[in-house]
Figure 1 (tube, rainbow, N blue to C red):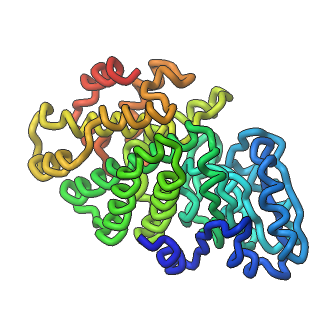
Figure 2: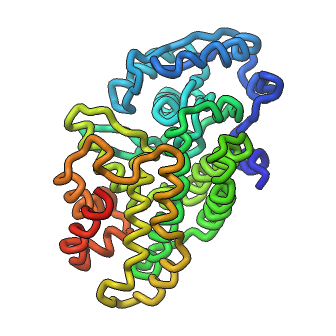
Length: 374
Protein backbone atom coordinates (compact mmCIF):
# COMPACT_ATOMS: atom_id res chain seq x y z
CA UNK A 1 0.00 0.00 0.00
CA UNK A 2 1.44 3.34 -1.08
CA UNK A 3 0.36 5.45 1.86
CA UNK A 4 1.79 8.68 0.40
CA UNK A 5 -0.13 8.25 -2.85
CA UNK A 6 -3.31 7.39 -0.96
CA UNK A 7 -2.85 10.39 1.33
CA UNK A 8 -2.34 12.70 -1.65
CA UNK A 9 -5.68 11.52 -3.04
CA UNK A 10 -7.34 13.08 0.02
CA UNK A 11 -5.18 16.20 0.02
CA UNK A 12 -3.26 15.12 3.12
CA UNK A 13 0.49 15.22 3.47
CA UNK A 14 1.32 12.08 5.49
CA UNK A 15 5.05 12.65 5.71
CA UNK A 16 7.82 10.59 7.23
CA UNK A 17 10.78 12.42 8.72
CA UNK A 18 13.87 12.82 6.53
CA UNK A 19 17.08 13.56 8.36
CA UNK A 20 15.19 15.39 11.06
CA UNK A 21 13.05 17.45 8.71
CA UNK A 22 9.71 17.34 6.89
CA UNK A 23 10.40 19.04 3.55
CA UNK A 24 6.87 19.03 2.14
CA UNK A 25 5.39 20.35 5.38
CA UNK A 26 8.07 23.01 5.60
CA UNK A 27 7.20 24.26 2.12
CA UNK A 28 3.52 24.35 3.06
CA UNK A 29 4.06 26.56 6.11
CA UNK A 30 6.55 28.94 4.47
CA UNK A 31 5.53 32.50 5.27
CA UNK A 32 2.73 31.41 7.62
CA UNK A 33 2.19 31.94 11.32
CA UNK A 34 2.09 28.54 13.03
CA UNK A 35 0.87 27.76 16.55
CA UNK A 36 2.17 24.58 18.21
CA UNK A 37 -0.45 23.12 20.56
CA UNK A 38 0.67 20.72 23.29
CA UNK A 39 -0.35 19.68 26.80
CA UNK A 40 1.59 19.10 30.00
CA UNK A 41 2.54 15.60 28.84
CA UNK A 42 3.47 16.27 25.21
CA UNK A 43 5.28 19.57 25.69
CA UNK A 44 8.49 17.58 26.09
CA UNK A 45 8.33 16.86 22.34
CA UNK A 46 8.32 20.56 21.39
CA UNK A 47 12.14 20.74 21.05
CA UNK A 48 11.92 18.08 18.30
CA UNK A 49 9.51 19.96 16.05
CA UNK A 50 9.79 23.63 17.05
CA UNK A 51 13.15 24.22 15.28
CA UNK A 52 11.72 22.66 12.10
CA UNK A 53 8.76 25.03 12.18
CA UNK A 54 10.83 28.09 13.07
CA UNK A 55 13.14 27.45 10.12
CA UNK A 56 10.29 27.84 7.61
CA UNK A 57 7.35 29.68 9.16
CA UNK A 58 7.05 33.44 9.33
CA UNK A 59 6.37 33.06 13.05
CA UNK A 60 6.07 30.13 15.48
CA UNK A 61 4.16 30.35 18.76
CA UNK A 62 3.29 27.74 21.39
CA UNK A 63 0.17 27.10 23.42
CA UNK A 64 0.39 24.54 26.22
CA UNK A 65 -2.84 23.35 27.77
CA UNK A 66 -2.71 23.20 31.57
CA UNK A 67 -3.80 19.55 31.84
CA UNK A 68 -1.71 16.40 31.44
CA UNK A 69 -4.69 14.76 29.71
CA UNK A 70 -7.06 17.40 28.32
CA UNK A 71 -10.60 16.53 27.25
CA UNK A 72 -12.03 17.55 23.89
CA UNK A 73 -14.96 19.55 25.27
CA UNK A 74 -16.42 22.96 24.48
CA UNK A 75 -14.25 24.99 26.92
CA UNK A 76 -11.03 23.39 25.67
CA UNK A 77 -12.00 23.85 22.02
CA UNK A 78 -12.72 27.50 22.83
CA UNK A 79 -9.32 27.86 24.51
CA UNK A 80 -7.47 26.44 21.50
CA UNK A 81 -9.54 28.59 19.12
CA UNK A 82 -8.73 31.72 21.12
CA UNK A 83 -5.04 30.85 21.29
CA UNK A 84 -5.02 30.51 17.51
CA UNK A 85 -6.17 34.10 16.92
CA UNK A 86 -3.73 35.71 14.51
CA UNK A 87 -2.25 32.40 13.35
CA UNK A 88 -2.68 30.66 10.00
CA UNK A 89 -2.05 27.09 11.08
CA UNK A 90 -2.51 24.94 14.20
CA UNK A 91 -0.09 22.04 14.69
CA UNK A 92 -1.02 19.52 17.39
CA UNK A 93 1.97 18.02 19.15
CA UNK A 94 0.51 14.77 20.43
CA UNK A 95 -2.04 12.21 19.32
CA UNK A 96 -5.77 11.69 19.90
CA UNK A 97 -7.25 14.54 21.91
CA UNK A 98 -4.81 17.22 20.77
CA UNK A 99 -5.36 16.28 17.14
CA UNK A 100 -9.13 16.40 17.68
CA UNK A 101 -8.90 19.79 19.35
CA UNK A 102 -6.83 21.33 16.56
CA UNK A 103 -8.96 19.79 13.80
CA UNK A 104 -12.16 21.11 15.32
CA UNK A 105 -10.80 24.51 16.38
CA UNK A 106 -9.34 24.90 12.88
CA UNK A 107 -12.65 23.90 11.34
CA UNK A 108 -14.54 26.48 13.40
CA UNK A 109 -12.07 29.30 12.77
CA UNK A 110 -11.16 28.48 9.16
CA UNK A 111 -7.51 27.67 9.86
CA UNK A 112 -5.53 24.71 8.55
CA UNK A 113 -4.33 22.17 11.08
CA UNK A 114 -1.95 19.25 11.28
CA UNK A 115 -0.41 16.89 13.79
CA UNK A 116 3.09 15.90 14.82
CA UNK A 117 2.28 12.38 15.99
CA UNK A 118 3.85 11.32 19.28
CA UNK A 119 2.09 7.93 19.62
CA UNK A 120 0.30 5.50 17.28
CA UNK A 121 -2.60 5.26 19.71
CA UNK A 122 -5.79 6.02 17.75
CA UNK A 123 -7.28 6.24 14.26
CA UNK A 124 -8.45 9.86 14.08
CA UNK A 125 -5.33 11.34 12.47
CA UNK A 126 -6.89 11.62 9.00
CA UNK A 127 -10.62 11.46 9.68
CA UNK A 128 -12.94 14.34 8.85
CA UNK A 129 -14.84 14.10 12.12
CA UNK A 130 -14.07 14.90 15.75
CA UNK A 131 -15.48 13.18 18.84
CA UNK A 132 -16.40 15.80 21.43
CA UNK A 133 -17.77 15.77 24.95
CA UNK A 134 -20.90 17.93 25.09
CA UNK A 135 -22.97 18.11 28.28
CA UNK A 136 -21.49 14.83 29.46
CA UNK A 137 -22.22 12.96 26.21
CA UNK A 138 -19.85 11.76 23.50
CA UNK A 139 -20.90 13.39 20.22
CA UNK A 140 -19.20 13.05 16.83
CA UNK A 141 -19.07 16.35 14.95
CA UNK A 142 -18.00 17.14 11.39
CA UNK A 143 -14.55 18.70 11.29
CA UNK A 144 -11.74 19.06 8.79
CA UNK A 145 -9.08 16.57 7.87
CA UNK A 146 -5.54 17.35 8.94
CA UNK A 147 -3.46 19.06 6.27
CA UNK A 148 -0.31 17.30 7.48
CA UNK A 149 0.46 14.22 9.56
CA UNK A 150 4.12 14.25 10.53
CA UNK A 151 5.54 10.82 11.34
CA UNK A 152 8.83 9.83 12.98
CA UNK A 153 8.85 6.00 13.40
CA UNK A 154 11.74 6.16 15.89
CA UNK A 155 9.72 8.51 18.10
CA UNK A 156 6.58 6.37 17.77
CA UNK A 157 8.54 3.26 18.83
CA UNK A 158 9.40 5.04 22.08
CA UNK A 159 5.75 5.64 22.95
CA UNK A 160 4.56 3.84 26.10
CA UNK A 161 3.78 0.22 25.24
CA UNK A 162 0.15 0.59 26.30
CA UNK A 163 -0.29 3.45 23.79
CA UNK A 164 0.93 1.18 21.01
CA UNK A 165 -1.45 -1.45 22.38
CA UNK A 166 -4.26 1.09 22.26
CA UNK A 167 -3.55 1.69 18.58
CA UNK A 168 -3.65 -2.05 17.94
CA UNK A 169 -6.94 -2.26 19.85
CA UNK A 170 -8.41 0.42 17.60
CA UNK A 171 -7.30 -1.54 14.51
CA UNK A 172 -8.40 -5.01 15.66
CA UNK A 173 -11.78 -3.37 16.28
CA UNK A 174 -12.18 -2.96 12.52
CA UNK A 175 -12.75 -6.70 12.13
CA UNK A 176 -15.84 -6.29 14.29
CA UNK A 177 -17.20 -2.98 13.02
CA UNK A 178 -16.84 -4.00 9.39
CA UNK A 179 -18.72 -7.20 10.18
CA UNK A 180 -21.35 -5.15 12.02
CA UNK A 181 -21.73 -3.09 8.86
CA UNK A 182 -21.99 -6.18 6.67
CA UNK A 183 -24.63 -7.91 8.79
CA UNK A 184 -26.59 -4.66 8.96
CA UNK A 185 -26.71 -4.68 5.16
CA UNK A 186 -28.22 -8.18 5.33
CA UNK A 187 -30.68 -7.59 8.17
CA UNK A 188 -31.69 -3.95 7.76
CA UNK A 189 -30.87 -3.08 4.15
CA UNK A 190 -28.24 -0.51 5.12
CA UNK A 191 -25.96 0.37 2.21
CA UNK A 192 -22.55 -1.30 2.58
CA UNK A 193 -19.62 0.69 1.16
CA UNK A 194 -17.41 -1.81 -0.65
CA UNK A 195 -14.63 0.68 -1.45
CA UNK A 196 -14.24 1.93 2.11
CA UNK A 197 -14.58 -1.54 3.63
CA UNK A 198 -12.08 -3.14 1.22
CA UNK A 199 -9.51 -0.42 1.89
CA UNK A 200 -9.95 -0.88 5.63
CA UNK A 201 -9.76 -4.68 5.49
CA UNK A 202 -6.47 -4.57 3.56
CA UNK A 203 -4.91 -2.21 6.11
CA UNK A 204 -6.15 -4.28 9.07
CA UNK A 205 -4.72 -7.49 7.65
CA UNK A 206 -1.36 -5.84 6.94
CA UNK A 207 -1.25 -4.48 10.49
CA UNK A 208 -2.30 -7.84 11.92
CA UNK A 209 0.58 -9.54 10.10
CA UNK A 210 2.99 -7.02 11.66
CA UNK A 211 1.95 -7.69 15.26
CA UNK A 212 5.01 -9.90 15.98
CA UNK A 213 7.23 -6.99 14.90
CA UNK A 214 5.19 -4.65 17.11
CA UNK A 215 5.61 -6.99 20.05
CA UNK A 216 9.36 -6.90 19.47
CA UNK A 217 9.26 -3.09 19.38
CA UNK A 218 10.47 -2.86 15.78
CA UNK A 219 9.97 0.27 13.69
CA UNK A 220 8.59 -1.77 10.77
CA UNK A 221 5.70 -2.93 12.95
CA UNK A 222 4.95 0.59 14.13
CA UNK A 223 4.93 1.83 10.52
CA UNK A 224 2.32 -0.77 9.53
CA UNK A 225 0.22 0.16 12.56
CA UNK A 226 0.46 3.84 11.71
CA UNK A 227 -0.49 3.16 8.10
CA UNK A 228 -3.59 1.26 9.23
CA UNK A 229 -4.54 4.13 11.54
CA UNK A 230 -4.20 6.60 8.67
CA UNK A 231 -6.23 4.39 6.32
CA UNK A 232 -9.01 4.22 8.89
CA UNK A 233 -9.49 7.96 8.54
CA UNK A 234 -9.51 7.71 4.75
CA UNK A 235 -12.11 4.94 4.87
CA UNK A 236 -14.33 7.20 6.96
CA UNK A 237 -13.93 10.02 4.45
CA UNK A 238 -14.92 7.67 1.60
CA UNK A 239 -17.94 6.38 3.54
CA UNK A 240 -18.97 9.85 4.66
CA UNK A 241 -19.27 8.68 8.26
CA UNK A 242 -17.48 6.55 10.86
CA UNK A 243 -19.14 3.25 9.85
CA UNK A 244 -15.90 1.62 8.54
CA UNK A 245 -14.13 2.31 11.83
CA UNK A 246 -16.72 2.18 14.60
CA UNK A 247 -19.25 -0.41 15.69
CA UNK A 248 -20.42 -2.09 18.88
CA UNK A 249 -16.92 -2.05 20.38
CA UNK A 250 -16.81 1.77 20.08
CA UNK A 251 -20.30 2.11 21.53
CA UNK A 252 -19.13 0.20 24.61
CA UNK A 253 -16.09 2.47 24.84
CA UNK A 254 -18.24 5.62 24.56
CA UNK A 255 -20.62 4.30 27.25
CA UNK A 256 -17.71 3.83 29.65
CA UNK A 257 -16.15 7.18 28.77
CA UNK A 258 -19.33 9.02 29.71
CA UNK A 259 -19.36 7.14 33.02
CA UNK A 260 -15.77 8.20 33.77
CA UNK A 261 -16.66 11.80 32.92
CA UNK A 262 -19.74 11.80 35.15
CA UNK A 263 -17.62 10.54 38.05
CA UNK A 264 -14.76 12.92 37.34
CA UNK A 265 -12.33 10.04 36.97
CA UNK A 266 -9.29 9.51 34.78
CA UNK A 267 -10.41 8.24 31.36
CA UNK A 268 -8.45 5.24 30.05
CA UNK A 269 -7.07 5.47 26.54
CA UNK A 270 -9.66 5.24 23.77
CA UNK A 271 -7.99 2.20 22.19
CA UNK A 272 -7.78 0.43 25.54
CA UNK A 273 -11.54 0.66 26.02
CA UNK A 274 -12.17 -0.18 22.37
CA UNK A 275 -9.89 -3.19 22.70
CA UNK A 276 -12.02 -4.53 25.55
CA UNK A 277 -15.15 -3.93 23.49
CA UNK A 278 -13.53 -5.77 20.59
CA UNK A 279 -12.92 -8.84 22.74
CA UNK A 280 -16.60 -8.82 23.75
CA UNK A 281 -17.83 -8.31 20.17
CA UNK A 282 -15.66 -11.17 18.92
CA UNK A 283 -17.03 -13.42 21.65
CA UNK A 284 -20.63 -12.52 20.74
CA UNK A 285 -19.95 -13.39 17.10
CA UNK A 286 -18.05 -16.52 18.10
CA UNK A 287 -20.97 -17.87 20.15
CA UNK A 288 -23.74 -16.66 17.86
CA UNK A 289 -24.65 -20.14 16.64
CA UNK A 290 -25.54 -21.15 20.19
CA UNK A 291 -28.32 -18.52 20.24
CA UNK A 292 -31.82 -19.01 18.78
CA UNK A 293 -32.06 -18.94 15.00
CA UNK A 294 -33.45 -15.83 13.30
CA UNK A 295 -34.32 -14.70 9.80
CA UNK A 296 -31.13 -14.22 7.79
CA UNK A 297 -28.98 -16.01 10.37
CA UNK A 298 -27.07 -18.18 7.88
CA UNK A 299 -25.55 -15.16 6.15
CA UNK A 300 -24.64 -13.67 9.52
CA UNK A 301 -23.06 -16.96 10.65
CA UNK A 302 -20.95 -16.97 7.49
CA UNK A 303 -19.59 -13.51 8.29
CA UNK A 304 -18.92 -14.48 11.92
CA UNK A 305 -16.83 -17.45 10.82
CA UNK A 306 -14.37 -15.11 9.05
CA UNK A 307 -13.45 -13.36 12.31
CA UNK A 308 -10.50 -14.14 14.59
CA UNK A 309 -11.43 -15.63 17.96
CA UNK A 310 -11.77 -13.47 21.04
CA UNK A 311 -8.86 -15.35 22.65
CA UNK A 312 -6.55 -14.11 19.90
CA UNK A 313 -7.45 -10.49 20.59
CA UNK A 314 -7.00 -11.06 24.33
CA UNK A 315 -3.55 -12.53 23.79
CA UNK A 316 -2.38 -9.74 21.48
CA UNK A 317 -3.66 -6.91 23.65
CA UNK A 318 -2.28 -8.46 26.85
CA UNK A 319 1.14 -8.81 25.20
CA UNK A 320 1.12 -5.06 24.56
CA UNK A 321 0.22 -4.13 28.13
CA UNK A 322 -3.52 -3.60 27.65
CA UNK A 323 -6.18 -4.80 30.11
CA UNK A 324 -8.37 -7.68 28.97
CA UNK A 325 -10.99 -7.47 31.73
CA UNK A 326 -13.17 -4.51 32.62
CA UNK A 327 -12.35 -4.93 36.31
CA UNK A 328 -8.83 -3.74 35.44
CA UNK A 329 -10.36 -0.31 34.80
CA UNK A 330 -11.79 1.96 37.49
CA UNK A 331 -15.35 0.94 36.67
CA UNK A 332 -18.00 -0.91 38.66
CA UNK A 333 -19.68 -4.20 37.81
CA UNK A 334 -23.12 -2.56 37.67
CA UNK A 335 -21.88 -0.06 35.07
CA UNK A 336 -20.39 -2.79 32.89
CA UNK A 337 -23.59 -4.83 33.07
CA UNK A 338 -25.63 -1.76 32.03
CA UNK A 339 -23.14 -1.21 29.21
CA UNK A 340 -23.91 -4.64 27.76
CA UNK A 341 -27.63 -3.87 27.89
CA UNK A 342 -27.67 -0.20 26.88
CA UNK A 343 -24.59 0.75 24.85
CA UNK A 344 -26.28 -0.18 21.58
CA UNK A 345 -28.55 2.87 22.04
CA UNK A 346 -25.65 5.33 21.82
CA UNK A 347 -25.85 5.46 18.02
CA UNK A 348 -28.64 4.62 15.61
CA UNK A 349 -26.41 1.98 14.06
CA UNK A 350 -27.05 -1.75 13.80
CA UNK A 351 -24.31 -3.87 15.40
CA UNK A 352 -23.86 -7.24 17.06
CA UNK A 353 -24.98 -5.58 20.32
CA UNK A 354 -28.16 -4.38 18.63
CA UNK A 355 -28.87 -7.92 17.45
CA UNK A 356 -28.41 -9.44 20.92
CA UNK A 357 -30.34 -6.70 22.72
CA UNK A 358 -33.29 -6.43 20.35
CA UNK A 359 -33.67 -10.22 20.23
CA UNK A 360 -33.86 -10.27 24.04
CA UNK A 361 -30.79 -12.48 24.39
CA UNK A 362 -28.63 -10.01 26.29
CA UNK A 363 -30.77 -10.31 29.43
CA UNK A 364 -29.29 -13.76 29.98
CA UNK A 365 -26.01 -13.43 28.06
CA UNK A 366 -24.94 -10.50 30.28
CA UNK A 367 -24.21 -12.93 33.13
CA UNK A 368 -22.00 -14.96 30.82
CA UNK A 369 -20.16 -11.83 29.70
CA UNK A 370 -19.68 -10.58 33.25
CA UNK A 371 -18.16 -13.90 34.28
CA UNK A 372 -15.76 -13.96 31.35
CA UNK A 373 -14.82 -10.32 30.95
CA UNK A 374 -15.32 -8.52 34.25
